Amino acid sequence: FKLAGHSVSPSFPQCSSSSLPPASLSVRPLALNMAAHSLEKLEKRQAKPEPAPSRWSAPLLSREELTVIGCALGIYTCYLKYGVLQEKIYKRAYGLEGEHFTMSIFLVLIQCAVNALFAFAAVPFSEHKPNTVPPRQYAVVAFFYISAMLASFHALHHMSYPMQALGKSCKMIPVMLIGMVVRGKRYSTRDFLCVLLITSGVVLFSLSRPSKGGGGHTEPMGVFLLFVSLLMDGLTGAFQEKLVSDHKPTTHQLMGYQNAWSVLLLLAGSLVTGELTAGTAFVMRHPEAMRDILMFGLMSALGQNFIFYTVRNVSALACTTITTTRKFFTILISVLTYGHSLMATQWLAVAMVFSGIVWETVAKHQQKSKKKVEGENIKKGKKGDEAELEKKDN
Image 1 (tube, rainbow, N blue to C red):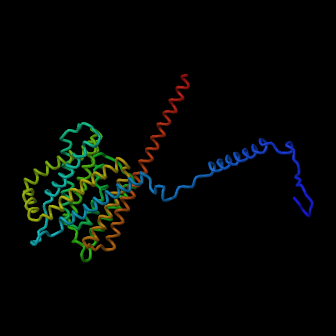
Image 2: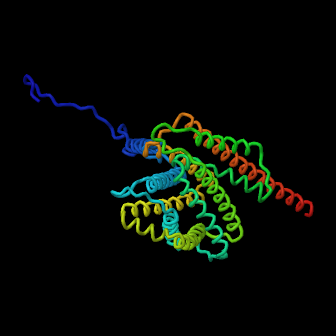
Image 3: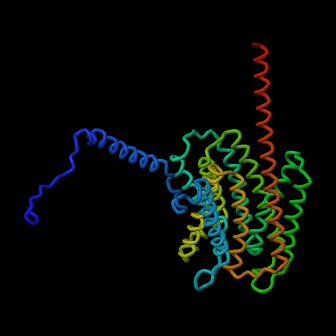
């Protein structure tokens, strides 16, 4: 550079090669630091807890709870509709002439025929097992089965449907009578108190005169037919238990053959009484009656299948609880649908009957649970004794 006539040469500080850091010493620590930083990030990411599942993604109900709800809805839907149709068939005036349906044998015949068809259609899809039950035993069970239904249906000509539904809830009474008379069985004080509570409720309901729209006073013949129906129900259950314990038929075999024998007995009865001809002529004159009767049979068949499914896949207690509460709602639906006007004493009677039934059901379940626990303890004790004997022998 020339500055004011002088030449100046630039001078730079000189650095020797020894004063510069080697490439290996400057780059390697940087790479190690970057690798360590990346590993640290990866470890933190892996250690970071996953977000908790949303309450909307988790199932609200378990499979068992959904099964119970499905069974309850199926039984309620079928048998509430069944009750409404039964009252409609007997109380409705069909056609312009206002004819009333009175052929109970014909109605039960159609119901049993539909039940048998559904049961035999389900046999190939259920447990494969040869039928070893003698036909005579099915015939006996079928006789008691249809006798209970016929007496119950005829009772509707002499009492209101709520009274009939309430009376049919008292199956504990004939079961105890049959147990004491036939089997010589003894019952606890609690059992007699339950029966007293149920009987008092039925008597109070039948003696209470409804105000307007009550559906008529309960006649003595209606009470007698209701008692006969309950007695036949008790005999049906007793003979079914013996049949099942001796031969162990499948659920749909029992349902199918019992209803098939019922159809044979009802066909003979309807031919003798002329109800087959009269019933056929009635539904020909009033096709809407045939629709009601077929739907009545369909609800009966589907309801029985829901009951059998509940007993087999949930528990007998759940089935009893569902069917017991269903009867209360049947009375309620009848009151709302057909305008029955119940007095306060009659609602009290309903509460008494169902309190007795629930008390008896809960106590029975507690007894079964206690026996089951005792049985398991006895088995455990026997196994422990056997183990000790083996030790001593060794």
